[in-house]
Amino acid sequence: MTPPVVHSLREQIREHILEGIVSGRWQPGERIVERRIAVELEVSQTPVREALRELESLQLIESAPNKGVRVRNLTADDLKESYPVRAGLEQVAAELAAGRLADDTAALEREVAALREADLAGDGEAQVRHTVAFHREIVRAAGNAVLRHTWESLGIEVWTTLSIRWFSPEPRSHAQEHQEIVDAFRRRDPKIGPLLKAHVLSCAPRL
Image 1: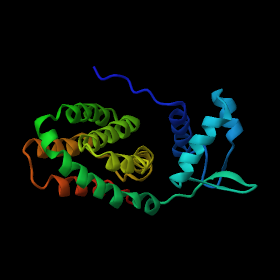
Image 2: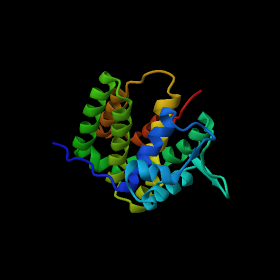
Image 3: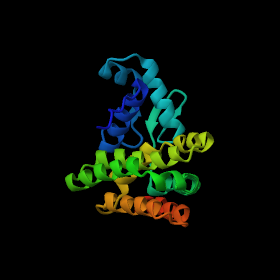
Image 4: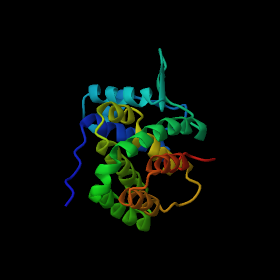
């Protein structure tokens, strides 16, 4: 059984705000009031402020003196900017992790199985969660702390959520796409790095 994931309070608040933006609770240009969120969630304003700063660093929201925090009017082009950077990092990760993952793909297979269930249920939230977890396992297996820190700093969960929920033109077989990557690791495909890079680039949002 996979142990439950325990998120920090800041991460939970960040996900709450992100879900509000994705669902349309807060429209582009609309102000997000820190104090109201704190009251709604029954928390202090400090973790709310931290969550907002994180989302601002990812350019999902913007703040201005005397105007507060507002939702940015994001386009597919805005979201696409992080994908070439992420693709390059994951190519390196796949090449570093190739031997380790060829010997043991169990962690990747668990996420593929979960993705298969999410695909069948049309569960977008689960698709995001297990897609990100799959790629995180590859980055973790690379065993390079600098690479992992840089990858995490891109806000993968945020951009994956927006890409799948806002800009995916049609349903995708997330499980099948990721199973192909597992199979490539198993057969020790010498092109695993470029293969994973191409996969990540194919996930960039399209109008």
